[in-house]
Image (cartoon, rainbow, N blue to C red; front, side, top):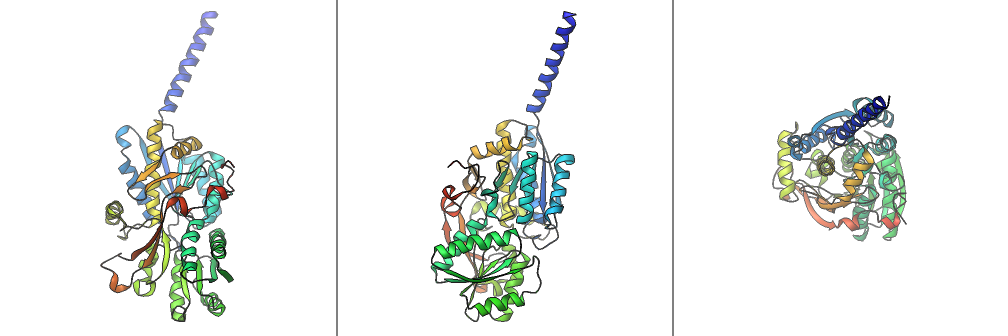
Length: 406
């Protein structure tokens, strides 16, 4: 009997050791790109974000080290309930380890909660709300590219300093628009300016005439567009038809992308000021990546900062997994490792990830070139100013994130 019990314990111990060893050496990763494939943000993320993820996998070198990496994607249709259903299916059935892109702040906040509950990972490169690293921060989420606090801090402050001290907001009526108006208002007021009105518009609007007439009637020096993608380009096009800029008011693109400028054309977009954290023609590293990206993109477009963020975020994620030696399935543990390591890639340069999940890197204030200043296709920006990473984002001293020790 003693021999049987000993054998039983020995067998159990060997089985447990084998299981533990296999678990430690688990080198299977599944990446889910959850994005807008067909709506007003599809040019910013969409198929381009999936391509960026695939390029990151190829460039990581993990396959040669025995890792198996799969990329899948889906369209969340800019609906939080649709996104949550997809995300739950991906985690429970598809065994997705990490969510990338997640354009749309309402969608991102919903997925953020689920990812924490399921101990997965969210690297958000598309949604803007600064709440993701503030009141709703999570040990499972990293906010990579930009946020409403940074956009307001850079563009808003620069415009008030240049004399734009009265503002009227055109705001997308959901979480992103509300956060961007809130954060920009705080910067405008702190800088000595005044907000004299605002109006909310539905997401994915086609007719901005009534909203623009209210903004025009306000006589505000700056009309702040707290929207993005197709909503921003439609606002700018219709503002041009109303002669708003010709009448002396200035449009502030609080969140503008290179795809928006391309859609508008330089004749309409010239003179717009806005902030981005990536531009394809910024340096040799950004140019080299962008050349490879545009050659493979179906529309041959240069990458947006959202798509660049997908690549950059995954490159750092892969470095962390390689350093850990395996087991990508404990989300909080992997994110903790990512925060320990400095970030460094050709797209965003050197940086870091703070305890609240905020990725730190410089922010660039750009102005759209006049048509005669452009030297060729996609040559749209001139650099006006740079805000260092440690000054661009919300300081930890002002954070409401529970992960930040006061």
